[in-house]
Length: 323
Image: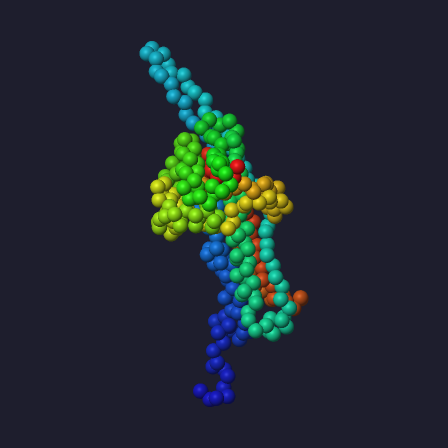
């Protein structure tokens, strides 16, 4: 090839070497950047199934009450019994987004690719926001005294275990005992902590309190969705334990998803719940993009999603609280 012949130069950002657009592939490196970050950062994502909600704004669960038993009397036709039915609906009405804009000249004059770094930050923020919204609803489910399905037979409220003193959260023996009492209360509501896929969510403080006392062992857990998750498990109880900074432990107001996510969680220490505890749906799965707008002469980094979550079966959830 002659030194001055540029016709055979490889342009890696062309689509199929089409000379019409030398930058056709330049943003492909951002595709999935936010989603990949969420997959690494989110602790709830692998555990909770989320229904697709398309063609409507509302997803509905139906509940049937438990069956009634009777005794057959010789010579008499056994009477039938009544089963109660109910339903629970979740409406998705909010789009949550993250957006950053970069003037064209700034993109060229920045010594690193700020668009990629911002994409990472979008992923971190959305992962934290989504985790916290699910944990908020799990905390609310645990503190419900009755089922959101009403007085449907066999459907119960959540379970709570209150510590004797605030300092008990950093005492491994007392914290471990509180976890045991909580699981006992949940199991008395006909929930099997192992078979029903309960997981225990702790803040790092409580997590390392148990870890340092050898109360946690290595394990691998298969979720209801078929995801294999390497985690720690409680040595005596066998359920997975997950450390996260996203447990709500303050007063939350003005939540982006609405008033149903507000509340006082300042006494919350730990959460144990199964995927059945929550009803979750999404109309717009996470979408992210990096694009150039000719009108504004700016690059935009965009991410958005639309979802919702609400308590479903509170008896599959429990919380440890401060006194």
